[in-house]
Image 1 (cartoon, rainbow, N blue to C red):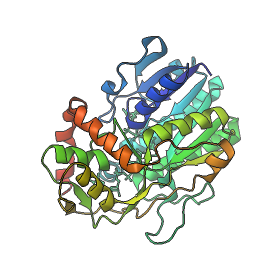
Image 2: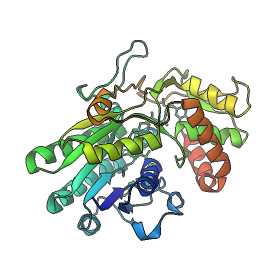
Image 3: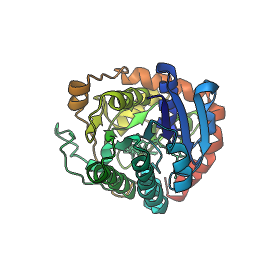
Length: 332
Ligand code: NAD
Ligand code: TDX
């Protein structure tokens, strides 16, 4: 594979993946990104210009997609509307991008016989009880809760159907919650870090008991690259790094790293339909493809992430007021 097309490469995980691929392989990367409120061209600076091309465009536009797919050996599909809270207030762009956009890409991949990797989420499986050690596996039935996760589930189903019906050479991965640099300030960890930098208190939904399974975005990137090179066509791989933590615990760790008292947070109105717990069993990826995460220590990764937000205020500052205004309108 020489030429890689990365959709959504100006977003959080996509931009981390582009940096990872350009640093660790000799592939050429073309990013297709619409630069929605979540896309940031500033996440893709200082890259080797002879191996990197940026195309601004919509994955749901068949002509745009055709032009970039025709020269790609493989596509890694990250582009999506990605925020649960936004999907509860306006589901329409989630259907358009996550469903129609994925369909448009699959049709082009079918035309050009392009290797396709679809990036999805553990949220397609719904949630687990707070108590007990059960974890999601590739065999867990789909049971999405939100407009966001239901459109991601729909997009996964489209990929499976295009593999079976049309022989598209696709794999799927479902990953747990990512953290790291370049994450939009609307998301949980960057919101709390930047609140504290601004002298505001972190905001925890409900009682903060909900559990998420955290993985560093760079580990997500290495896993996707592994699946792209060694994954079996038609297969799904769950990506996780044994990073389960309660939301309140995460906020207390951020407060401690930033020199604040551990109770300096506010409990705010809960999210409608809030999933209780996510947890990934990554055995298939580890045993069949021999992948291992590099960030074993969440606290070290969290500290580096806090330092990144401190050092890169110019990157996040332009989005902060608008993100907080959206939350204020929701009482959060
Ligand atoms: P993000 O919101 O930070 O980035 C999404 C990117 O897609 C943005 O650059 C945006 O401009 C672009 N985009 C949106 N609509 C587009 C369109 N119609 N055409 C072209 N580009 C468009 O999202 P993220 O957190 O980086 O997530 C990336 C992918 O990873 C998503 O598919 C998401 O479902 C999946 N995922 C995310 C997580 C997580 O923890 N954030 C976990 C598992 C899976
Ligand atoms: O201010 C907040 N306070 C709070 O308690 C925010 C923004 C969130 N939360 C809670 C809600 C969740 O339990 O923190 C947890 C994480 O919230 P988000 O960052 O919104 O992530 P989540 O809803 O878990 O979804 C994320 O992981 C799976 C990504 O946004 C998805 O794209 C991915 O599929």
